[in-house]
Image (cartoon, rainbow, N blue to C red; front, side, top):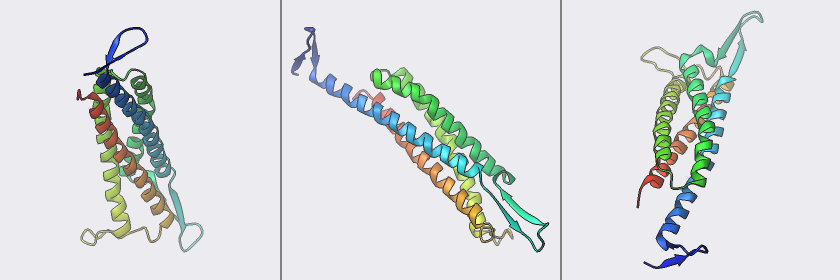
Length: 187
């Protein structure tokens, strides 16, 4: 193995410097993906949390309202996306630390553990909400549940859009976990 002489007279192997550069690049990508995932979870939570639609009935005094908090699954979706967003913002500090010290392993293991927990929380919230959105769009004739998205079109478009943002964040979490596993590996 060839050695590279550094200005202070010490020698560093060429493989060690390239491996350190790769880990630093992975750490920078981790930081960027955390910011993007935080934006998607925030967008999903805000889009779902502000979804309301009111339809008039036969008289102007009677109105039908659809709000996200009428369905507990949507409330869980907003809470899980909010928790994921707060976690991602707080984990930016540790991710920035990994850019500076790309050889840190124990803090990366801690980050992978919490990433996996939040990934599970985000996945359960989005999957449960997706099931309700499916029933809202198509109904279930066996259970005698009728689709209500024909009447509440705006409501259904917004909740569907918030699901898209959340599922993009889930994919980004998968990539984050894989990147952390790559940076932890010794080879």
